[in-house]
Length: 357
Image (tube, rainbow, N blue to C red; front, side, top):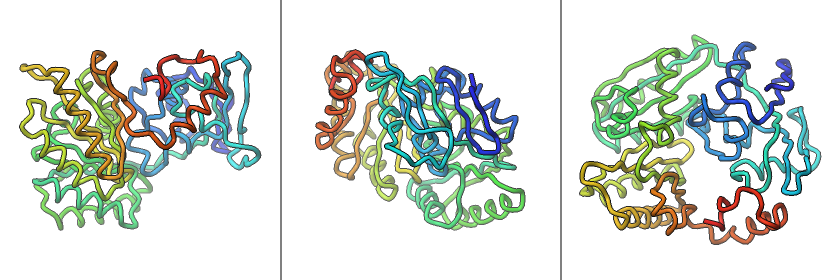
């Protein structure tokens, strides 16, 4: 449940077991929301979402999950309840220990309660969906918007394979650019006009503007991609790189695997350098060797681009043989030291810690 909500201060303290959708519905009655859009909001709890640490398309505008938490209560491996931070945004005393547990998969402590920084809901929203005939023109437009003075809520690029899985995006081209906008009516109108001018200067085939009611389902599909039953792939990886390297990296993926029987579905968030690459089993089936080969080549490509990958979906038979975390050689001693300090007996979520895989 929500323990405390102070609308005037844009803060709330919430128990970890509340679902994200229930929390957002309650905050929405006061014209506010928690500025995150994680997967499966109807099922995901706040504590689980923070422990997994996966951000959605909103990350570009509002930051990561760590930017929304101002305090936590944690149960440590000894069963002792510890507290960090507070219930006010300008709390600067002590270390920000909450950040250790966001993305920690419950391996350093159990999240029991969180104090959150809230955001006013945009007065109006709209989504601009544009189809492009080529990868280059689509990403050039996305990066042009990213580098401009405009501040959309989200910038996402998908390909036709991803669109066919989600079904909520009606697209006729091989590449689709989705831009989510919010603000006052006149501001929204001006931003839409500026972005449309950028799109028209590139090789686009068609564009559609949808209102907030219709766009909600579109962005929910994008947040859920790779997590719900319809879009959960045989192999799914998350690639983190600099925004400028995304187009060339995707081209490399498509060149390497263009003749493979599992064409990849692409969902990319250029503004914060994230690419979701997913392969789906088809009628021919795929061997463990094929999947291992895809993972190793993906790691090499990401490393050559100065980034890294996390394997988010993979068959159990493969997972037992690979390192799902990619290259973490340099910070390995640091994270292992944290585990030793906070959970010396390895009681918390055994097998999930980065060095346990």
